[in-house]
Amino acid sequence: MAIKKLYSSDKIEFEKEVAILKELRTTKHPHLITLLATFKYHGKYHLIFPWADANLRTFWKDRPFPDFNQANVLWSLDQMTGIANALYSIHNLASSHPPSADCPSNVVGQTDATSSTQREKTLYGRHGDIKPENILWFGRLGESRDKMGVLQIADFG
Image 1 (spheres, rainbow, N blue to C red):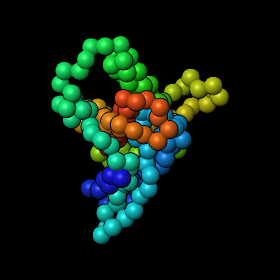
Image 2: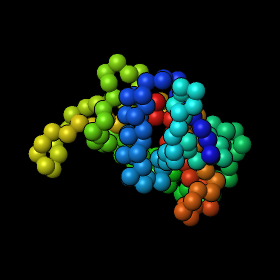
Image 3: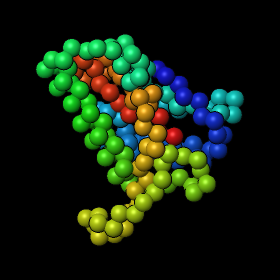
Image 4: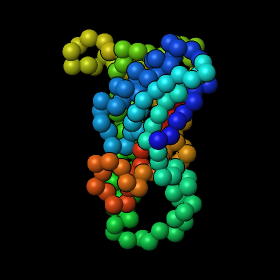
């Protein structure tokens, strides 16, 4: 497991971030990191996530010249499609726990007036810091059947 210590001690913002991570967890998206648990220690909040084998930068460094074969090309395309779809899920997250306007978070709101219920819903999903260090590689991940592993988006703010 990996433990992320939050810099803010603001309980309300912590609860909002946890609520959003839990809402993302309900999508069971294979390319989004899963929040396992939370705790408070010495006045600081902590989030527990699965332990990754590497981030994408390290993954590339360890494999500088992969074979250009069908398996690698198909895996890469599958992972890129999965990451793009995961971003779509994030961007279309409708939350009842929006972050405050003054919170330095990567999660912000926008309005979607085209909901099927014809009522306005607010979307609060935005990552804002996509980079190789925030995409994690899991060589073996629970139910994943992919022998080459799975890439997951992490570090939402």
